[in-house]
Image 1 (tube, rainbow, N blue to C red):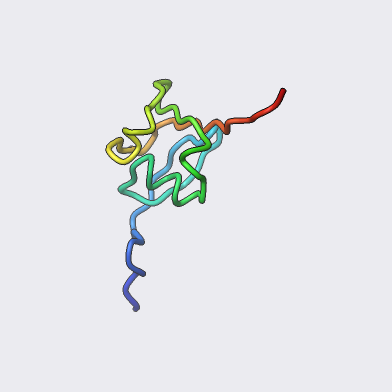
Image 2: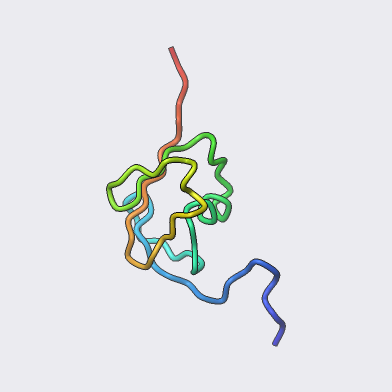
Length: 78
């Protein structure tokens, strides 16, 4: 058996991501989730359990099993 790659977790948890059930690595912060999903944090707003999380708090805000995460993309237009 080989060791997991650096930064990879063997643990998983289930969350609700944009209204759909999803399995993600654990432990996890919002910043980790965005990186896992390859999403640029500068282009989205994130809500965790119906509370908007400020971008400056993404690295400090943990996501737990069963949490509901909504990620909304900013769209420009005119």
